[in-house]
Amino acid sequence: MSAFPFSSMNVKSGCGWPSFRSPTALTQGVRWVTRHPLIATATACVGLAAVIVFATWIAIWFINFQPRGIVLYKDGRTVGQSYSHPIDEVQLVSYGGRHLHGWGSGALSIRFAKLVNRPEELGGGRLALLGFSRLHEAPLRGALCAFDISGNLEEPVWRSRVASGDGLPDPYSRDYTAEDFDVGKYWLYDVFPSQSGPEVVVTYQHMKRSQIIIRIYGLQGELLYQVWLDGTIQSSYWMADARLLVFAGSDASVNWGAGGTLLAARSDPLVVFAVQPTIGHVIKEYLHRYPADDDVSLAWWKYLSVNGQGVGFESGWVLDVLSPTPASETDRSVQVYMKYNELDAEVSWDLDELGNEIPKSRVVGNAYERNQLLPDDNPRKLPAPYAFKLSPTPPIVSTSQASETSPEGGNEGK
Image (cartoon, rainbow, N blue to C red; front, side, top):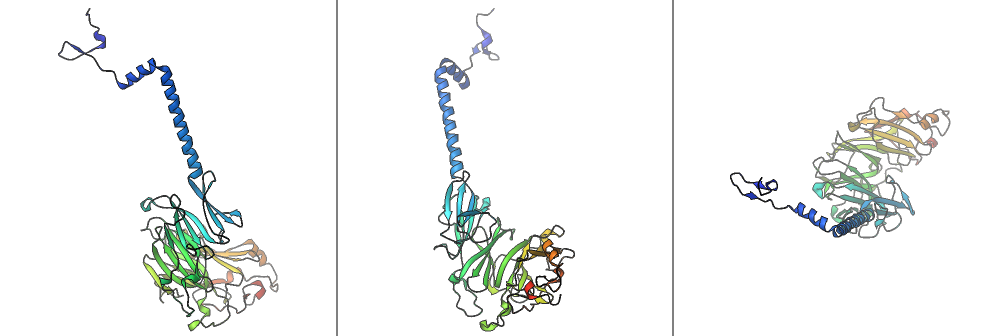
């Protein structure tokens, strides 16, 4: 039996002498802990406590200071994100409900507010899009603004408004100024696939007259598209496959002659029209009812009438464009929705990409059907729901503000 304990040694090949392996750091650490158990335990407790304190601090910071969303206020009360009327204040809140920042300077000072995700290639994070009305304090008055909610909440990363250098088209020589225009409605659509993220469709409305600017901005604030309209805009819908932006509103141009002469005291006829936006199409001219006139981006233009009588802006009817019914091809169609508010009576139908009614798509609401059971001589009876038509020819609208398409105007021609 050898005098050396070779069981704990490594013997190199070809060499009779053993070589001893040095202890690893782990081995040394285990030996130290074994020899100093109290110090090791205390150190572990301090380290664990530090981790808990740090994790708690991170959680508290996240809950109290990380932006979660926005809250809208009207008359001191919260309103839903779908609220479509001017509001008084917008608060950016954390996950714990803490108010981080507020926008708004009084009653009806904000037209709209929306959080939107910004693509990574544009910087990532989220933007707060706010439209400040002319009732807001300067310098944000009348502007569309984008704020980085993780950055400077006082100064927008970009803003846009109607400026004096925009070359305002003034068809009736009324000496329009940029201060006459207020930010109006907005929508988020993916209009241009070549651009990162959705685009912002926004309107700027003359505060006393009927002129409107329709603009499309990228998320970096670049102006991509612009046209003018003499009328109003009620709603819009993006027909994705057909690449058409459809609007419902009214046409004020039919009631005015050259030089601003009022032709008749008629209510402006309700219209539905579609444009096909292209990047860089920024013009300072008005849309007209025929695509071949001045604006190549106009796809079609249709007036609403019933029994040959135009339906006016002040007739009591509301005209909207919405997502089409399930029976239609969603991205190549749009729903025309009408409602007579006083009676809560509804009728709708779908249009294809050419603006033509899709067969068998007309839907009549229950209230409308009940109304049709009234005797013909009842002044509250509405026109037959299938009598409403859309056509490219401007109809004659009654000079009465209560149009003949309302119950009080009678049911002649039904």
